[in-house]
Length: 312
Image (cartoon, rainbow, N blue to C red; front, top):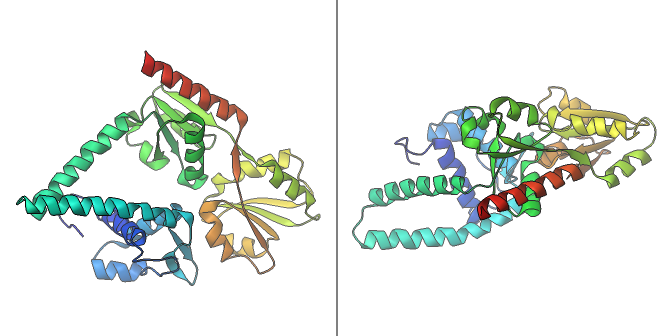
């Protein structure tokens, strides 16, 4: 790793692990070192390593289960990293060419870093939409849907990174009903904010209504706030013959509650961990959310205004 402080250690480690997965030096099912062992080997703070592993889990690249440690996930996210092999080949070719011209490895590394910063700034200037929310609210799924509807580039900013620099969020912000109060509080009044409502898919509501009276049904996310709205929607839809509960995996009683459940609907970010915690007779379902039609209409209107501004 580069120890001169030019690139944060956590970022270096995260990207190195992604490259190892992309080049299949780390394959699905392979175990990663524990945070304690890695901290001892690299001299890196455990809090930094925990943050790296958590981010990789939220990206769908690793699984973290009790008693099993951290391992590379068998997921589409890992398989999609294979495209980075081509980028690695391009970078290696450029590096070899620069070295052949007499540039030192340090000169090439510094130039690449500076160029990367400039390209990042340029990309941000071209962003049409900035999506601000908590990653626990299925950010990847929502971002894909925003792109499908608008055909515009989308940059994601987690809520905890938005507060220190609200002026860097741009003029068009999209968030969910969960993130709206926070976003509204930090941005300028003239900022355009599109708020997306999330709803339960009709098929899932029909399934809930078929469960026997008294069954314990849990909606589970990394945080309770990610699923409490889904609980309220199910209650409004008339699902009252079962015991419904919203649960976050950060709740100290989460493991006990999961062992008592008959059915669990887990967001993708919590799904793998939930599988390791439920009792053998419990059925675990993926909790898939849909954008409400009003939100889709607002996104289309946003895209039309963006195109008009470009033509103007």
